[in-house]
Length: 106
Image 1 (tube, rainbow, N blue to C red):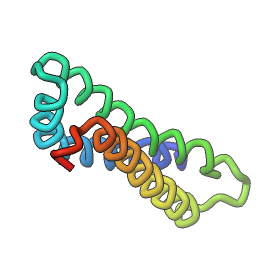
Image 2: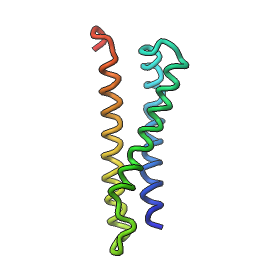
Image 3: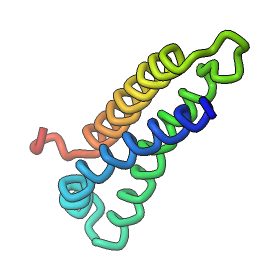
Image 4: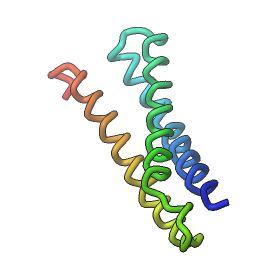
């Protein structure tokens, strides 16, 4: 039962952040990529990565299978790993986009 928290919470947070960034990311990537089709691919890749990375961290470092695991400790670890995953995923995405921008736009 506790493992469900380690999957559902990070996935929902990742999808919420992806949805929040989707429109502005799409417009930015159309400018960088040149076509809507190309930018749509990168928007979807970003959605997958921002949604999957927190889940990966929560499952990797979670401890729902430990004998002494309780709901509070699982939720705490899950929220820490989810936050770390979102911050890392968005930071990598922002750094990659910043590298791709023309010098005058920075």
